[in-house]
Each structure stands twice: as structure tokens, then as C-alpha cells.
Length: 501
Image (cartoon, rainbow, N blue to C red; front, side, top):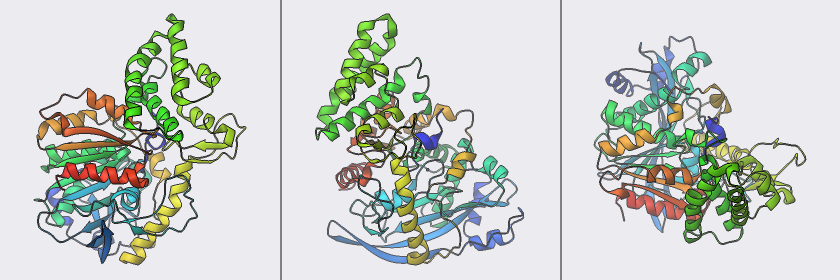
């Protein structure tokens, strides 16, 4: 299986079993009191008490006044010891019966800053599109696509990301926090604890997860439903990493190549200013029809290979010799070097039309990092640290990890990790006829291609209303919301999911 950080963003980048009643009661205690007497051998300075500030943002000419809270919740092991502390950023507004939405990014190793300051929070910093530079001023401005007008927002940073921290050594942290199954249990309890602490158990509840956060989404929803007794009203999965196994078996199965060809074709259409849903429809049908069947024929039918090469060349605009040598099977990183080779640039797997200079153009393999990942750390880190410590006043002398490669390196998958989250998605929808799900993708994303979700949802039983689980695509890549028009379209679709005008 490909490492999650290499195939699924963050940002777009866990745990201890314990009695939920005890944990809920402990959530009311200040974090400083919790870790001051920690018995785990760590003597870190205590976290500050929760900090609050009042702000406003303007959306569609309407001023929204809200409260920002930055605070932490403890994580305990089976013996009741505090083994970690999770930092959250919450945006709330007055009003009866307001829903609350919990937001997770992915990685593993990503904080929630990408959804917060890029997609749905009330303030935004520019990043993730062609022309953005890491050294540009990290200035926050009103976010026209914020969801705050119709839901409160709680952004959660998993242990090892943002300012959230383990209070045990790396070996124990890996055991308790950095594994597929424990990650879900721990984050589910954090959602539960925040609801208890803030008296929001009766609110409508939603979850949004991006990338590996999209892998988390169905599993957290299922765990909350079946283990903690908390039912979500809806899920929004942005560029989700739902099925790791779909990209395996590249030597035999046509599926890995089926997942990426439509996104590569979409990038070509965009460069020609021809990208529309209408233009993509026949490409999707070709991919799941003739392309798949011709690939399966292999060398038993030379004419099938010729058809694939001719059609793939037509759809992608690539050099016919490059397509021929690949057998019509376009490996992602090879494609991202080839498509911009004449310009001396590389495309990003998170949006293949976002580029950077290739500092080693004559090397046999790509030797530098991804153009988007290399470019988003500085602006998001600078903006979030300044916002938390200066604007909100949650004073902390610690490093902020927008994207932790250390967490990703320590991460290990449990036995069922390669099964993905599709089973939990099906079970959650089956368990609750009121649950609605929106799966949203950017056309150009090669890290979590939209075609995977299209095929996954097509195989799901309808379970009543078939529109309860929908896949939507938008111009852009993994963080398609960085584009103003795509963000506006997403927000409109999400408002429909939430049942607001």
C-alpha cells in the first residue's frame, strides 16, 4: 500500500481506550491541572487555559459576529493517566439550534489548518494555486466560502499536529496514537468530549474530512454511532482517501490506471480551456468501458493495445512515444515530469496544473518535493501561529506542525487499514436513514482521484434514497477550494446537504 502522506493530502495530514463517562467528566478540568501532575515522566509546561476572542467576517454583504475559542482536551489511557492533549479551534455564533461541524485534515500528520484557513473557516490565507509563493505575506482575509453562516465549526488537530502533543515517548505514542484503529477511537472520543463540555449533545452534528481525513470520516461516524451513541446528520468528504487497495495490483488490474486517467485528461482539457462536466462525461464512460477491457486483453490482442495508445494520446495531449512506452498506463510521477518537461517544470500530484521549477531536470527520477506541499507549509504555519498566539491570545512556546513528516514516519497501519473506509461508509448510511453524504473532488487531483469515489458509490446499494450519497467534481485539484469559483460551488452544495437556503 502506498504511504498515506504520499497519496493523500493532509491538506489537506491516535489512541487510548478509556471509559467515556470518566473522560467526559475530565474534559471540564483545565488542561494545565491535568498535566501538571502527570505520572508519565514528561515535564512539559502546561497548556494555557482556553482563550477566546470575538471577531467578525463579511459574507455576501452580511456581517457575521462570532467567538473564536482555542483550547485543549486531554486523552487518557486505560489507567486514567493523561497521555496526550488535543488542541482545537472552535468558531461559534449565538443562535438556537445551530448545527456543529467537526473538521479533520489528513496525512496522517496534517493539522486542520488547511480546512480552517483555506476552505471553510471565517478567515482565509492564500495558498495552493498557480502563482502563490511561500514568501507571500501570510495575511488573513474574510473567507467568502465559510460555512459559519449555517454551522458552528470545530477544527481538531490530531496528536503530533498543530500544537497537539503526546505526553509519552515515541514508542508509546506510536502504540497509542499513530495507528489506524486507535486514531479513530481517540478522535471519536474527542468529538464526544467537546460536545459534552460545551453542552451540544442535542445539536445537529456534521463531520468534514479532507484526504486521509476522508478516510477517517466514515470510520469516526460509524464509531460514534455504534460505540459512543452519537449520531451524525451528515458527512462531507473532500478529496477522500477511501480505498487504499484500489491503487494496488498495478501489474494485473486495470483499476489503478482507470483511477488516474480521467484526472490527467481533465488537466489537459483545463489547459485548453475546455474543462466542463459535459466534456468529462464521455471520458469517464470510456475509462470504465473500452479502456478497462482493452487493458485486460494485454498482449493477447495487439489491436487493443494500439487502440489504448491512440485514445490515451488523444485524451492527454502527451507525446505519442511516451504513451506508447507506457502502454497507455500513465504512472503519476512520470506523467507530472513529462507534461511540463519542455518548460523545465514539474506538476503537483495534488493539482497537476500547479507547477514549480524542476531543480534536477536531467535526473532519472524526480529529486525534489511536490510543488504544492513545498509551497503551503510557510503561509499556513505563519498565519495560524500568529492567529492563535496573537489574535486569540492562546500563548504557547512550542512548535506548530502544519504537516508533520515525523508523525507520518511513525504511523503504522492495522490489519484492516488496506480495506479502507468503504465498509464503514456503507454501514453508517444503512444504520441511519437520515444521514446524508457529499463526496467532493477536484478534477485534477492525482493523489486521491475522483474516479475512485465514482466507482465506489456506483457499487453501493441505494438504501432508500439514492441521492443520500453523492459525488461532485469541481475544477481544481486536491484543494480545489483554493479556487474561488470551485469554493463557491462547494459551499452551495454543502448548504443543500445541511438543508439551508
